[in-house]
Image (cartoon, rainbow, N blue to C red):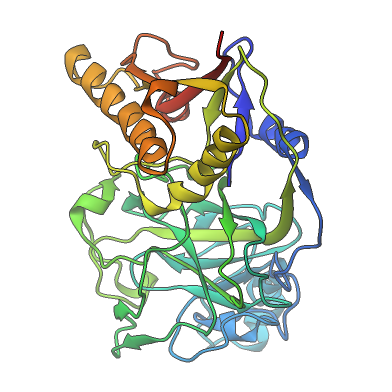
Length: 383
């Protein structure tokens, strides 16, 4: 799961450049395993809430209340239709304007929608994943205009069987039966609050073998620490059939799980960024989704026993500089500890923290701060 970005001039990749870099460091060796990935195929235009079950291939288990939006649903809002059915109450599930705000589809004419803390999407893959094979997983989200809060927890969960949920009559999910966290997660320090642009949530996954279902959700019950409040609390009432005072509602589009193979051999003397190493919020503890990427770095160090590595942690400019220096150093140390605990001689490893002293993007924007919080490394040959 090692996607490494060369920073010869220490410029961070944009979303477009990042897509190009995937082609440089990894090679897709198969097609998208997600059927109907942008929700275009539907049995009918959505006329009411919870219509995700009418979308081809999606949500193969009961009691999920995800919504579906399609441009064809605009027909229900025409004067001719309203004249023909004057007493029919129709919630608007069209594209781009709907009951949750205004949003164009990222591609095509449709997308799905979920409340992050009590709804989920699920689909059976075209075929099961192969053991020890590498897959690039991705989906795009956009927070709806009507949302009170944005979360930092959305992810994709791989499983051999479809996950099941317990729901009550208010559509509130009491809990997911998950044995482990979702394997693909939004970076825990990034709150998903953009209501205009589609944000990718991307990662690489090394399959255990046999996984044939994915689910997309927040996978956490609602809690104030998981969200960033955007506007005062309010009752949604008739707008949405829920008693929630806080709603973080996300549109979802373009879901993919694609087989990949690694095609990369780092050069000495160049700076690389570990793109898929994540830590607990404001801490230095590695999250489980970091391990596939670190395992590839470990394998490289084992293949080149004469190479040494320097690991550097960085933060954004929030907080005091002494605190940022300590946090960045401890995060670099966590990566170094992973290597030494797995057999790499500590004499080959150095680590350090730079705090916020070496930004690669503008700390005045959320996107810039996300890029500045990073762990880099540089390889050298033993003299």
